[in-house]
Image 1 (cartoon, helix red, strand yellow):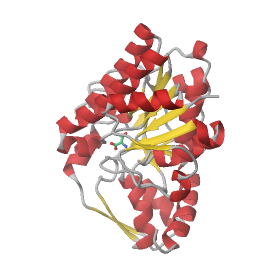
Image 2 (cartoon, rainbow, N blue to C red):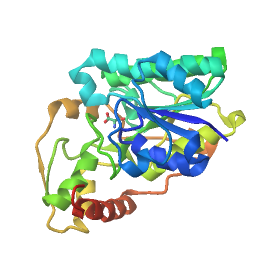
Image 3 (cartoon, helix red, strand yellow):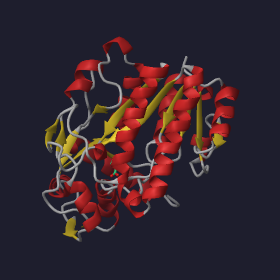
Image 4 (cartoon, protein in one colour):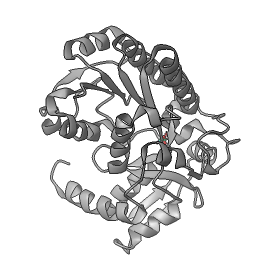
Length: 320
Ligand code: SER
């Protein structure tokens, strides 16, 4: 049975990955950690939780030793738009946490999962059916850190035998913890605003196509990749994975099927628009399909139905 440490566990993905991994590997085998513990009590109390600044390698090492960790899920990240506001911080955090995780795993001969992103691509990358292996010249510090992280993961695998693997996630849509500081955040916010205000002020323009994925697929993809037979893996860091590609008009139309009075206005955020314009419209994830049988379950329609159902319950409850 794996002994897992999640770093950056209180964020959008981590807060849902904790219960997901605990269900598979057992509550006591999944140690969650972050700078703070602002998570629902049922998540915090379901297994071990440690306060950890992932830039503190000594403390990370202590936790790895204490719990006999063999696998680290590294979810520490400053996202694209926030990174442009503070590039130094973004570089330090995005690279520092990964470097500590890889260095510690060099000693333990363990495994490291790190998400890369559509943000690893740039304006000179083919935008449609973006291949697995192609031009990677991103123009954000987030993207630069992701390309460096991909290379570092492969380096630690090649030189030191660390079982480093990763996914190039598209925008992740979810209903538990909000993302923060990303360019794809609009596709989460739109559902909250549709339910609460019937109006959304969209900060990306119509016609801005981006890859997206619903959280259940994102969680399953991470586990399936980490469980994949290493002999089948031609690639490691990192695999293109996608579930759908849409623009703001398409997601608004899918919401309008269930909330007919929903309206959308455009208030463009030029920094986010420029970032989105530099990213793929739709990725080709055939390497993931061939090497570890990746297959998404949720399309836009199925995701919208589930998001609206879950959020109506969440937002209807006092104190949520
Ligand atoms: N969701 C991320 C962002 O928008 C992309 O991986 O920054």
